[in-house]
Image (cartoon, rainbow, N blue to C red):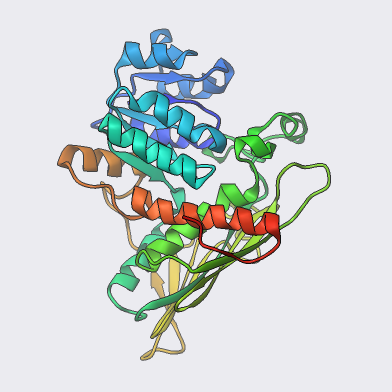
Length: 353
């Protein structure tokens, strides 16, 4: 496996998953800015001949079977098209793409190359959300009719890989050049977080698509992108709300902010609340309308992280399923594209296809 492009700080987390996997050898890392690879080089004891600043040289020299890509959202299609010609499997860090057209270009490039594609949504590996999906599949709350989602953090510059907190000086210097705050690079809280809610919400709802989308995003003074958005998607069964926020009072991995980050799922016969990082979920049913608190599932290999799962699919020649699949992530991308259009027009739009 090789890790290519360190634009997104999640590269460090994904490389850790690869490093800890007994069936994976980390053969190379590559980024145009070598300083962004320093912590990975130190953490994983990489030799100088495994570190590259030219992506093609990295691919040709290391000949990886699996590539982890963490580029800026606006360059996802570019980077997938670059590495797919080598016939590799790809783990693409969320979101799927900056647009539905890019998402389809990514799928096409992977199909031509012959490798498997997994779109990684870190929330898909959180035990409460996995537990919620199991309870849904068991029929505990009947048919899912709507999903409410709220998620975000204090902002993308408050931490680097492994959730290491940055300084105020770093944030002041980086904001002017960070891709997270560039419109043409796919920045903004909507593109950063809406795909999570839209894709996992689609997963919870069994792959159903909405009919219309209505979105409002803020316009912070002096910024090219939003830091807060609210999307209402109308389905045949009712309404779903997806809210994204850079600027929560606290980060959910330290202290849950208010509102809490996570999902509220409403079914025909019950409800589930599933919040990020929490050790329990709360379930209401017809038989227990007062609600009960259930411990989250303990995840086991190969379903603990995206590297485990994609290697499992590769070795077993299995399709990539759930939120990581192209099919599920594409519906999420349709919702995101529709939200961007709705916000720009200031009105409700039909789901884009």
